[in-house]
Image (cartoon, rainbow, N blue to C red; front, side):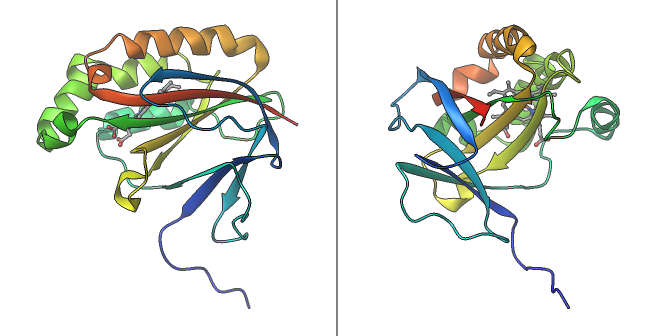
Length: 188
Ligand code: HEM
């Protein structure tokens, strides 16, 4: 019988020459770049071995929600698409690190910046169901980034994705972002 694996659900994103997603572009928005890879693979550490040879590896865990109200969660679950849609052959992996000033805030202050002031969720909802997303937390793993953000969309929706990024980057929340790299991919 198959026994369910224990521990947090950890994923490794590996940039290199193998992996199902070919890199189309890589742009630094803030901070230092990482080595440019030809392709990116995503490994579920519960199921697969992590590749030993990679240009870079970034790890993240699927975690609980921090800032989402019950009402927001219901709205999101009614509108957000799943990953792996056949038409969503474009993707983006955007690793993000926030500043010490962000992490020094209390939980209620972070929520205030994130939603009441910056309207992160309500901005994001404008782009559903075009954009599918998944958030990975890396900070507590001692990683170079705090978050690995993953998005999937159809090629014709890439201009909308760019518009979404521009709106988020203009918010108070993004003044706390000190490192961000935008890596665009195509399913290959
Ligand atoms: C967190 C929604 C797009 C970066 C969140 C959370 C929600 C959300 C609800 C909070 C999760 C929680 O409660 O802990 C959305 C929606 C989007 C979207 C609906 C539309 C596609 C983006 C984009 C980026 C981004 C384009 C930038 C690359 C982040 C980050 C966090 C986050 C870094 C973690 C923030 C923190 O914990 O400090 N998003 N988001 N999101 N999102 Fe988005």
